Length: 171
Image (tube, rainbow, N blue to C red; front, top):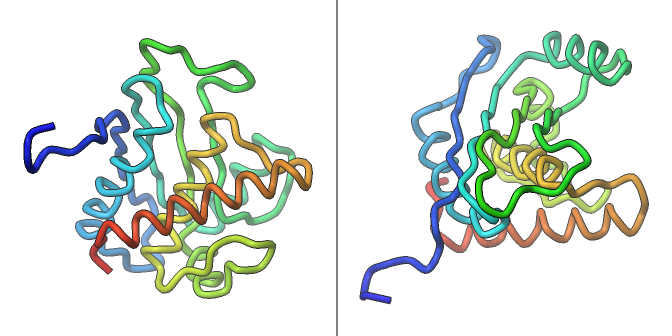
């Protein structure tokens, strides 16, 4: 490879939508970090794909959780995959799905996420990025329904978040 080029093909294109007003989020910096993270996550994809990260309130994520999962509770992240239960195509992925994150819940759990083995985050942006990673892994077929699946998924979260930190992301 020529000097200065990267061996990572940027296959993931993430759109950021802030649909909540309760908590101030530096969307400019989050966008920059999301671009850095997308380069890392691109290696998990066989072809170019698009994903949306939508930031919402607790009330909105509770409504979505109730309407789509029949669980009337607030949660931190929901994923809505296009390829639900089927393998990703090798040549053209296109729209991968949507990842919905409650900023209120993310703020409550930042710095404490080591429960259940998830990486511990340092601030709200990093918590949102971790939840994006978790949602992304669901979109590409990872799950945590069994203890073994959870171990694999959590190990992948740690690996990706560590790589993001090593890449010199902007804290």
